[in-house]
Image (cartoon, rainbow, N blue to C red):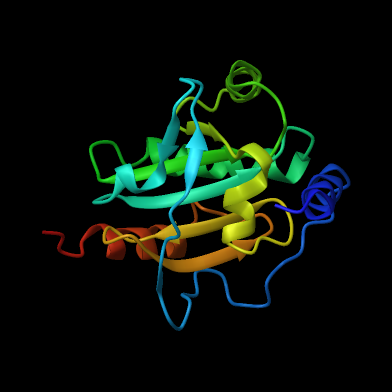
Length: 175
């Protein structure tokens, strides 16, 4: 990702200047598109393909440790994941910080966000592929690997209308 764009994402997050896409909460993209081939860092030293989670509904949250609004979003997502044990749902927290995975895990642990799967986006490649414009930003990926919704700004993920949308996706058939 262009370093200027990555710097702007971090700066907007640090000052709480996240941009909200002008769509209704829970609205779906008109044309679902395949999730790009995203490789993340998980601390193992090997790239982790997000496609490994195909068959699950993914709520992918892009965040930064210096972003207060991001922590609010992560809290909602953590609650959502905790309320749906045993379901094919993965709440994934992708840090846009240039810090180590232990530092990312420690930041989530301090906030008691234990249900989230932490990853890092080295160089902001995933953020660039998805065209993110601010933090926090989220995408929902269906069980077939299609991006079905995109949000920028804090979302109340544990609200009933959001849970209804997630449950609809969870109940779709998957081979």
